[in-house]
Amino acid sequence: MMNSEKKSADTTVYRAEWILPVSSDPVHDGAVAVSGGFVSAAGPAREIIKSFPGAKLVEFHHAIILPGFVNCHSHFEYSVFRGFLDNLNFGRWLLEFIDYRSRLSAEDYAVSSRLGASECVSAGITTVAESMYSGKSVYAIKEAGLRAIAFQEAFGMDDSRLSETMATLEAALDELDEQRGRLLEIGVFPHATYTVSAAMYREVANLARRRGKKLATHLAESKAESAYIRSGSGVLAMDLREKVGWEYLMREPFGVTPVKYLQQWDVYGPDFLAVHCVQVSSPDVAVLANSGAAIAHCPKSNAKLGCGIAPLHAFLEAGIRVGLGTDSPASSNVMDMFGEMRTAIFLHRGAQRDAAVLDAAECVQIATLGGAKALGMDDRIGSLEPGKQADLIAVDMEHSHFTPIYDPYSALVYGASQEDVFFVMVGGRPIYEKKVLLTMDEEKVSADARAVKEKLWG
Image (cartoon, rainbow, N blue to C red; front, side, top):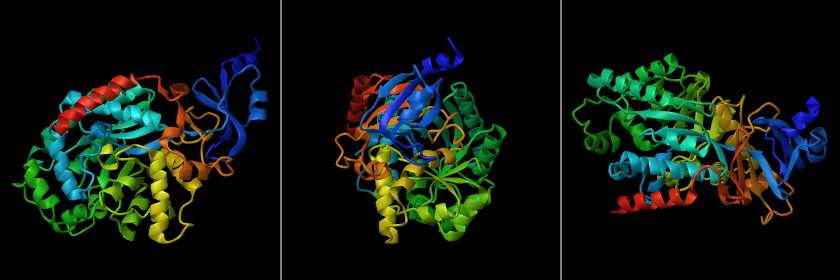
């Protein structure tokens, strides 16, 4: 067999009504060729089929093929918490959530993580930046077949115990590093400005650089956080510290914004991901832009908890890398990137009173290639280009109200949902096909999660 024939025999061509490479214009009646886990070609179906004679042809008909979504912030461990605290502002929500969280065991977190991972797959999310409290998400991510950066969270306000806290963190990272692989890397996530001291932020940032790991944190999410950092007041300064046993620690107001506060401790850099950034000023945006940091924008969670609307347009104008994040089902209920895109476009147009501030194509770009750039993975994923990893999804539009489709971007953002995803591939490996999970027992995942939910309600 000639080399070209052998190459074609090892190739699968996926054909659909529309192909969205994201890095180039949409293709009507297009196809994507996948070989050895990589995209070999994407373009007009006639040309792709001709270029790979003998390749297996899979017809998706009235569907849109696009890169898998990149979820830049999630908490799989909290998937079972959806619906518990739907009507509280951020500060009170956090206090109540801490009480509920204390009811779960390590095994419960493992169950919840498997639920979150399975839901991500079925929603067309192929890459996640997962923030872990217990560390159990790693195993669910690997079982599901997802690509991920799994960030181990770190907490600590008592600097007299800093050496002990950092040693514990190092040990956790050593254990997690044993799980690293082709699809999984490990990062570090100092939780937030109100749960991590300045000294610890500095130590964790140094640790991340020394070990070559990406760094992320919740930042400028709420007015409560801003009040805590600027004046040492509010629910986070009083109620939260009392609840977690930190009331004995001295707390001085810093008189600056949360963004400026972290700038003092040498935290920012190109491998830093700031999650939320709702309560930010123009100088704050400049600080983040000048540092090379990226932002995870979580529009649904921020709106639901009454935190506000992050200035997405200002981020993009400043040249900041921005991706979308679903946050956890505890605050956003479902990990649905279609919902995040739709929420983003409506919120930002409404807030700016300008329909030109964000369009559907930009939303899809932020949810795919934008997220890949924010995570420093755009050399591998985020678009359908030759040489990139074959992380792709197919969305069924046959019964869409948009039929016939003239603008596939518009159809996806305004008309599709996670229920329309029927095929998901990561690194050339199908993990969801004909709406069936291929890597996990969906019935068992759901049954186990229901048992944990009943424990929470009890």
